[in-house]
Amino acid sequence: MLVETHFRVAVVGLVTTGTVLALFVSSAAGTAGGPGHRQVSELLLRTLDLSAARPGKRRGVPPRLLRAFSAPGALRAGFDDYRASFPTDAEHDETGAGRKLAMPVLASRGDTGLPAKLPTLDIWGEYAADVTGVELAECGHFLAEEQPRAVLDHLRAFLTR
Image 1: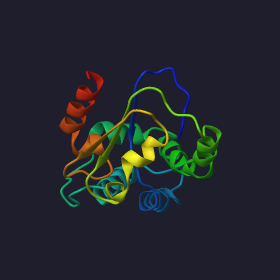
Image 2: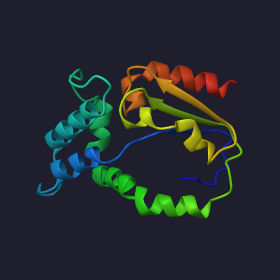
Image 3: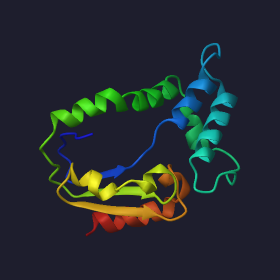
Image 4: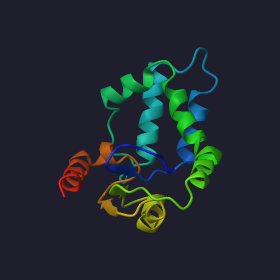
């Protein structure tokens, strides 16, 4: 999505949709008053595991994620973000057609899953004039969760170039 901004740097992470959203909907639906702490924990664990470079290795959900996603309205906000992908994001893309972000953009992705198969630099090159691509080894959908040190190292290098 092309967004007008006053920031001097844009950092994007390429994400996927589909299976994860279906899992959210099927796991959270039908619980009176919304999902409880245990359901949120199971949902996050399954989601993180399904999207990981090495499924089955995760032993639990980081406490900060569990707290954040257990807050009232948090799951709905996450679902709404995915729901906005189509058609809202596409409409915004059309609105900004022909314009490119002027600031440098860091486009990051993991080396497994759908994003690894996409031409990331070509895609983001349509939205920004200066794109740097980073592919993180042994990483799936959730970059900061799977490879926090690598994300930080690449981000620091990008911001100090």
